[in-house]
Length: 95
Ligand SMILES: [Zn+2]
Image 1 (cartoon, rainbow, N blue to C red):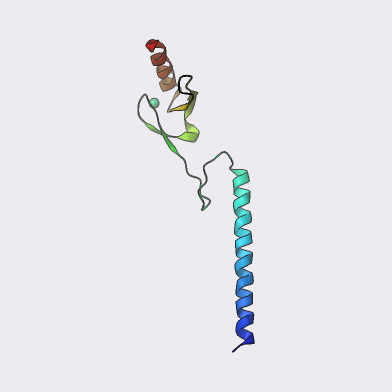
Image 2: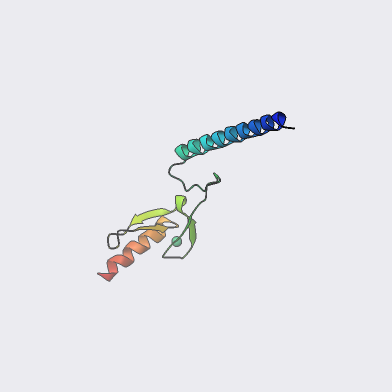
């Protein structure tokens, strides 16, 4: 016991360090590739569900039709262009 144990610990520390570095690099690459997507810490892409205010369907945000509301300055998501048009018509009737 003694020197051998120290060498083993040194090797383990080195391997751990290498693992951390390669893992960190992978994450950096993924971030660059999918900058427009929502990425969890473990690297999986999570589709955020958004609610259509017209038919109340839940749609993955990436596939949703987007409309920027002039009133609230927020982006509203729709399942289809039909719902988007309905919403625009409804907004027009209010005024
Ligand atoms: Zn809809």
